Image 1 (cartoon, rainbow, N blue to C red):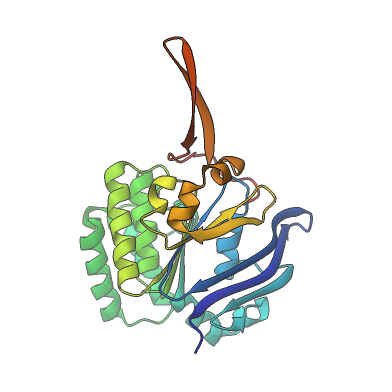
Image 2 (tube, rainbow, N blue to C red):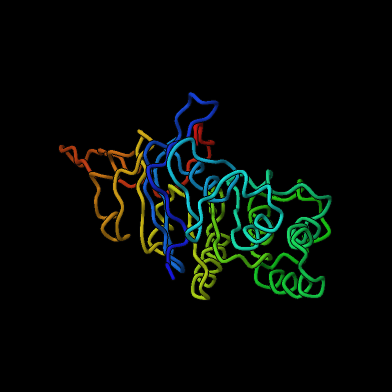
Length: 275
């Protein structure tokens, strides 16, 4: 049996048929791996995750999940759709897209209720996540009243409670304070240690080393510029500079100007245009 969870071959996608977002992408992701997709805004990272989650479908090329080609017709099949949604969870870049119920508790348990998971099992999972994420005092609050960090915790909980085999995360630490980032990182590392496949889109290079076995670098041309082991990618300053993940910074020391490359370790809050 193949160990490949997702396989993409020569995948193209455009918005409205004219705004290119992915151009000839080839990716193979193995079960239980930690994979990061890095690149500048507009390089196609979010689009890739939406393809993997079956929210959009390729204009050209092949997208397979566990050896089966994904198509819009498949998701019209209730059994297939339910099984896929139990297997794959997506945490959106903007948590407000994901949170829509009157209270935090209702948002977290919405997914498993829709998937037909037993109420006692849902309660057990909810109690565990509340303890792990320290969100007990948020359960009865409206999501729109939460801080961005609290919203991200709740969005993550709403995906984790399904207990998916694959977790897709779009900029999971954007705008978070260091302590909240640390808690989420520890949770993802623990989830991977338990066997889950973790696929993260980010341009926060602070987190890439910890949550990656393999890294794909997306270029401005919406293609994969390079992929490889995390240490080799992060050491390639020329590659990072060429794809707007590092920049040249100069400063004057006494009478000399010194030039150094700097990676973009902080997150830029602006939304991606053509993700």
